[in-house]
Image (cartoon, rainbow, N blue to C red; front, side):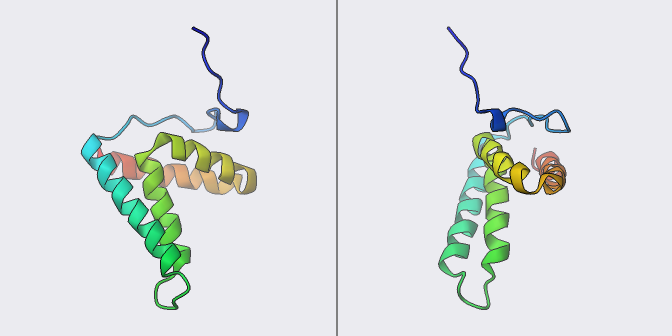
Length: 102
């Protein structure tokens, strides 16, 4: 059976971009629910001055990327094109959170 190839931007980059092992199912469900809530809350209540969407949406997406490796690959493709140095910081925080949650 031929192996399907990933899009070139979704390939693992050699610079500290190792794939983390999956978290426990309960932790992934909790991260997915919390991340989805933060993204939706940030988008719905973003125009209000007391609840900054600029904070809630990125935190929600970060939690979702911990729950889903596919979303992490998509996020990497988006960020690496625009802010490659920021991606290395994000990966460091993601690895730290992964160690704390596993």
